[in-house]
Image (cartoon, rainbow, N blue to C red; front, side, top):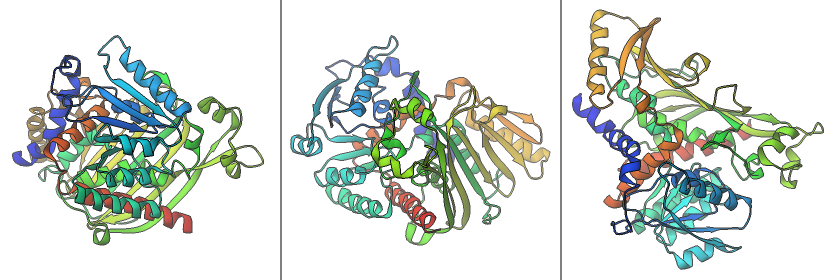
Length: 464
């Protein structure tokens, strides 16, 4: 049991420490350090996640970054965010951005190729095509989700992974939620058979695993109000919700329930149902979050006579993976309730206990992990306490207390790094893979399984 725990949390522990001491480790690097093994290029950064990758400095990474993009508000927003990180009072970054803006920005990047890692986070309509072209030109790719938004895109993505393997380059998506501490601890406790038992198979009516994510169009990032590009509301450019945020939820299911196991989408996954529905965006809301006074022409087909824009940002997938029934759903609202933000809900049902993450008003909108035993007993309580004590050696300060019919896992603030800090963790993880020259053997098939599932579910939802 001890070996299993160490194998599954060692990256989190190392990378949590990396983020916590970023001011010392990254801030103290000098130009003389060996940091030029990895050089970033950024293409068409229309999503703020591209800037969040550059919110921290990294050892082994050249401080010079090469930006290739079309002129316009997307690149201006990216530059403003990176500039803000460079001029903050605490732990300012020292990236030196070299810009090229023009119509054939991507072709020029592939000709000049000043870096060896391409960061992609932006408009998703061409993202899969960019991924494939970069891989074909021997460039490693570190891509924000989703890497494909429809079945045509999935076919291109599958080709890209095949060619990446042939050329020895690493294609990887930015799965930040693996570093959220409640998800990490939920995974660890689910591996404790004396606490959790075995994962139940579940049924479509009563799934063994349920995950729900609630997001908001209006939000703050790095302390400033986020301006959404208008294309973010066009599912032909951003992708529907069922192929976007669901990638995180599917990834967590695979990573938590089947750690280190290969998932073959051809035989291990069966979709039982999929549906999608719209979020209504009022003209004033669209103006508030984009800064535009009117809808662009490409959105007009989705605007009713009442001037309300309908966005297919919500979706639900019911499926079976390796014999385990799962339900995932994503919901987009316009704005979070006062004091709230994006939220995550997760339930795993074992033969001895249920592991539940909630992040609602009762939790003051912070993710909290609770354990609910089916048949509590002194022996089971002793097993839980022993598990938490062992995990506390890796996650100092965690403890457990009775809470209603279950037990609440107490997590100190020092382990709650937050969504933006998770970008540094997943980036450092990717850099470590680049140094090794390969990904873990299960990562590529599991990424393919994830994107097959999202795009196939969209196809089913559209057919209903």
